[in-house]
Length: 379
View (tube, one colour):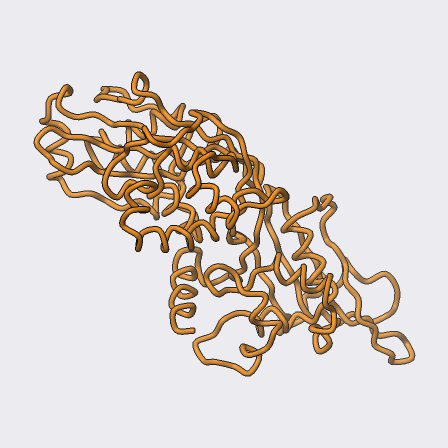
């Protein structure tokens, strides 16, 4: 419990405390590419380009100032400055004595954006150990930018630690290697593809097995000669993500302008709560209120304030739950610093995400399959 609370606090610090922190789970089509010996070395270049993931990798390592480095980030607040000694080393080292060795690239779509993870090792003459780096990228207006998204540590660790040839097998979901086939059986399904959260759990076990770790991970070398693989594969990945922009608020004071948009007759309107959600570049707003008829009877109702069509998936799941359940459930099922009685319930335990926060996708599946768990929360 203490570990989950700590991770929850970290997530709050990453995405801001003014909004609700909920996870959701999705399956995405991915393309995985391993770089060959003839195409994987990038050397110093005077120009800093943002047009391809490969150029971002080059620009990231060969940046000669914090100003140039920060320009590669979508969110400048997540940029970590480097000391001058690093940039001096880059400027003064001969171009033939340092290069970026590309290892692999994973591209996928997410919330209407083209996304990518690119992995490389920087090699410098006279330095005995390489610098492994994984960049999380997003394409905006034709250019790639570094975007450090919350809740991606497990997939990042898997992409950094497993050998590229092993990742190729895992993402495709096929292998003739006995050890890799066993991992695929534990972490992959036909419906959702490779589950990186489960794969991370397997990675932890593998790292405690010296023989298996040497074979499958980059702990000792990059050797893939004993593992049959493809340099380019397509597959699916199943990951847990954070809603980046979602707010659930209760009304402490009535909003007369909002009431005027809802009111259609002489009945009184008492606003109770409101959901604001931005997902896949669209805005959704749902309001709960009590409509009080002339005879004094109070009727609970909801109204959508937007006209956007809601696609299947995380946005629809959250909207359906908000519409059908008491708003209090979202607070009750979110982790707190102090343990509460509900934390021992099946509803709480079965709706946990990867980092202990509320997973809306899991809660939605519970609502569809076991409504008895929600007896105290039906709206």
